[in-house]
Image 1: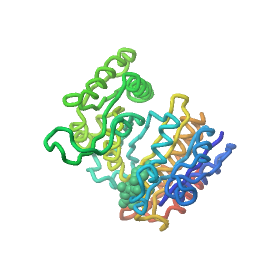
Image 2 (image 1 turned 135 degrees about the horizontal axis):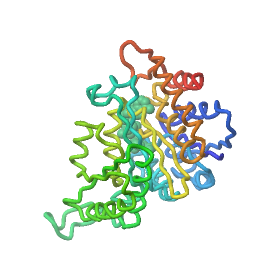
Image 3 (image 1 turned 120 degrees about the horizontal axis):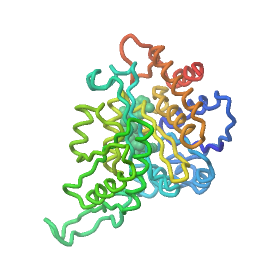
Amino acid sequence: MKIAVLPGDGIGPEIVTEAVKVLRALDLKFDIEEAPVGGTAYDAHGHPLPDATLKLAQAADAILFGAVGDWKYDKLDRPLRPEQAILGLRKHLGLFANFRPAICYEQLTHASSLKPELVAGLDILIIRELTGDIYFGQPRGRRVAPDGHFPGAEEAFDTMRYTRPEVERIARVAFEAARQRHKRVTSVDKANVLETFQLWKDVVTEVHQDYADVALDHMYVDNAAMQLVKEPKKFDVIVTGNMFGDILSDEASMLTGSIGMLPSASLNSQRQGLYEPSHGSAPDIAGKGLANPLATILSAAMMLRFSLNQPEAADRIETAVKKVLAQGLRTPDIYSEGTTKVGTREMGEAVVKAL
Ligand code: NAD
């Protein structure tokens, strides 16, 4: 089992170190190799995704990724910015399916910004299409506006687009995932306004004919954003496009108590995957030992389940995380009165001990 470990910037190295400790504590043999990515890679090699890092990622069965980015790189040309590394990896590896489970652990119902009764027992899965939509669509750029409200003024534009096969494959991923859960899919679109999402809705409806055992409903994205905070437990699997998924999954993270709890998996059609916490590099707390490593540790569990075919080891890690929460250990982002505040390393080591 070959794992490429790409810690990245900010809190990336701190949280990835803890996840690797947890992997090494399992009685499994891994071939783990580390490489620079993001701003760290730019500083050392002049590019956020050096060739050697990309080759290592391509040759691995799975990639454990920390986070990239720091304000100090904001003035670089866009192709050299740290965030391009993650977009590049998604594109080169064809990682089109992003899984973001939002689970509210029993012990953290009070850490959520919503009332405990709204989030207690929450377990939803957001499946976000990851290689299409307005984030990748061409053409894009800046120009002098040829028409519109202010012809002749400077304007910027991006292109939202999806092809039928792109929607078909992500819809299948969602229906298959729902079959392993509560058999309900909500497809989120904006078909009332956007052509792209009318196609999305039509294709999802067609694919649904192959999954009669799964219930499907459609929801506009503005309503979905509202329902997520009004009655989040009514969702099972949400499937949506790249941009809507980006926004809704961050919103869902707050239901779970902290973005520091939210793992993610991005898979291609061979089930090779990149596993990372849903949060960024948190430059505001980097190097202080304050970051919550649990999202990264839970991402490692997803890696064992989805790419490395080790579901029992994945279960063991998830159980260990629950145990540590039950012991009352909390990093500052999930701390509440009556619990014990710990740092990044203590939290990682507590999970190892619980294993
Ligand atoms: P962020 O997710 O890094 O941080 C948002 C807030 O959440 C901050 O207050 C931070 O301290 C807190 N936070 C995040 N992770 C935490 C953890 N594990 N434990 C405790 N608190 C945590 O988002 P941002 O501040 O908008 O972005 C910072 C940088 O990260 C930017 O350069 C951005 O482009 C980048 N980013 C990278 C990724 C990625 O690598 N996949 C994703 C999102 C943002």
